[in-house]
Amino acid sequence: MARPSEFTYVERLKRCVPRCDSELLFSDDLKSAIDFVLVVCVPFTVFLLLLALSHYALIPSAQFFYPERALLFLALCFLGLDVGFLFRGFLLREDIVCGREGGDSFLLPQEEGHRNIACFFTFLLTHFFAGASTAWFCALTGAWLCSQVGIVG
Image 1 (tube, rainbow, N blue to C red):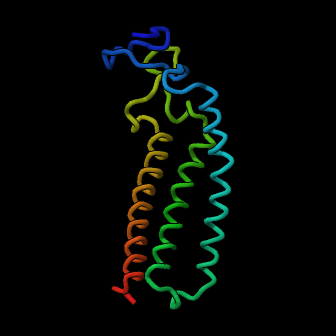
Image 2 (tube, rainbow, N blue to C red):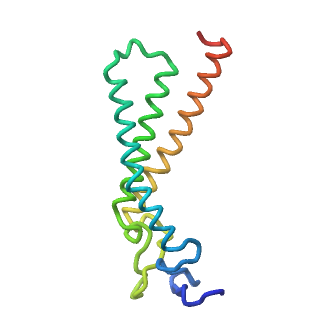
Image 3 (cartoon, rainbow, N blue to C red):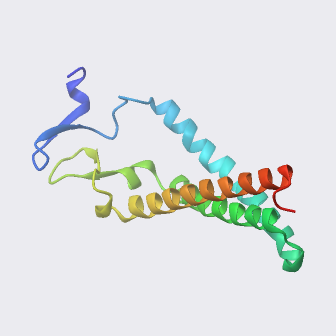
């Protein structure tokens, strides 16, 4: 083990796990920079998505053709993804990822997300809406390709 002071033995798992305050993969400065990006950039993208959705709300739905509807659903998926990122950005990293194991005084990463509702909720929002936005992006790309080739009018 390279840095034994950064690990704690967990009896239930029968192995050593890194403590949450360790800098094994990322430095604290890098973690703080990512937190800053989440808190600053995600509200800006939420504003832009709400602006795009309000544009679609003002247009009668009879004027929508298929590619435009895929844009609407893609924007809704990105809005859901941003809600997950905002939820992660406004809670502390330790509140979502870490917890105390038994009587330990150290915060340890939780490997089972169902024990931590904040971790579960963040994962559910980001995983579901990331997958849905990928699917809608593929649908939008396919519709755009078909309209450019002339398969669909």
